[in-house]
Length: 286
Image 1 (tube, helix red, strand yellow):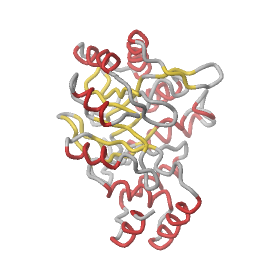
Image 2 (tube, helix red, strand yellow):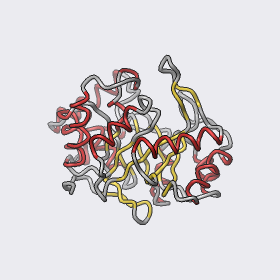
Image 3 (cartoon, helix red, strand yellow):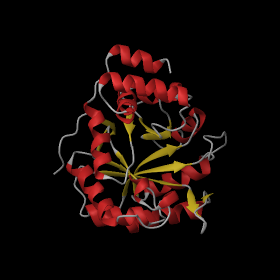
């Protein structure tokens, strides 16, 4: 039984209720998201603490490690609590040099789904996000063939819900013509708001918008503005940035990552933080 985490929940589909403050498991692998964790016992403790504190939304992928993170999740949490939803993603593989290599061929996608099922010890995956685009962000292009493969696996009962990662609004529309989309996972934070319109669209269409890199890509000037607001309200910059995201839209769900129990607790505490109107206005102007 999990605890009750502040920040509320979001239900993008029947049977899929996510804690808006989730946990991203990517950082549990070694350096560059490759190889085993520096401290395996701490990694297991982070996962168990997240669930104990009320997180019902864990983001992962079998290409984290590769395989390492999913194996840690199984070790730490299996048998899984009934209310826990594990969201994974497919569309890439890792090179021996830790490089990230697109892997979107139909048979490769099917194998990635099977690998996630096997390593997590599940009969069906709660949510599978198709990750496309490039390292710098979304790129225009068709995704019907790739998303269609996942839609077939959903029809076969291996996947319950489908999502997208690193996509444009047009790609979301294309995918929705094939099967329902319950999540979009894109880069979005105080300083990177190219997705403002897509976030608002997700809210209007009851799609969970998972904002990643909540503190990524800030200039020194932007960081200074965030730090000033955080100091004034008595919170850390990370907590302030996470709280801003939660208040930005009811559809935002967050997946901050860490390999430290102490840092996990600090991140989750951001769900209790309600930013005053003047702080929100100041951050909106960043």
